[in-house]
Image 1 (cartoon, rainbow over the protein chains, first blue to last red):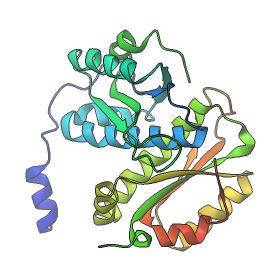
Image 2: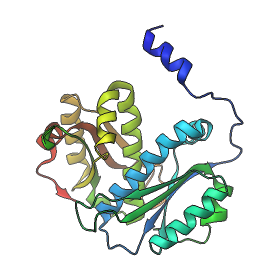
Image 3: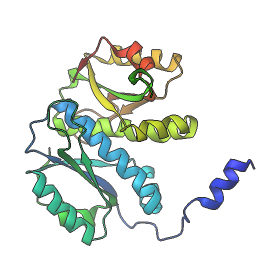
Image 4: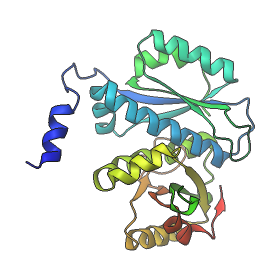
Length: 138
Length: 122
């Protein structure tokens, strides 16, 4: 074993914990208050998905593993505006769901620092649906 | 001070001919982004770190058909860049197995620009 993989092994998070029961997914809620083009939305959701993936790898590795093993299902939903996204984030946090907020650097289309996307999960479908069940598909 | 040409970047190249909805496009692009990032972490760990620290730049471009997407994928692979081709599971909108998006990077911006400078933003 190389020195690096040894270091990795002793510093990697403990993969203990229960595997998730039932299907899981990641939900990205897009701020519809901003007039973003399709490509812009895609890039912002991409930011959210990558950030949420890294976060779950550090904090909930079991969720990440199961999500990756089952085809990394993602769903994109519409949020009204920044307040709506922050409100959903608060609810999700208190339900123990991993949350990730994406703020745009503002190189194109919208003002710098705008809240563009809220990413939730990866988490079990049933838990996410309690928070996002009412939202429409983008 | 690093010049912008050396900063790592990622491009998500989507097929415009499939006429995907905004949500569909976003989901397909994020598949590519996540998979590229995870693959690149195994082979280009320091580059991924630099990319993230510089704001994880991503842009979404378009091609008109599958052939152009595959040609770009071949060129990127020949240049030694990390690539990922998204094939849709076909639950919605497009038939199962349809190639929707090509992700390239994170890679030095120069290397990416050399391949995609002709493409339009989606």
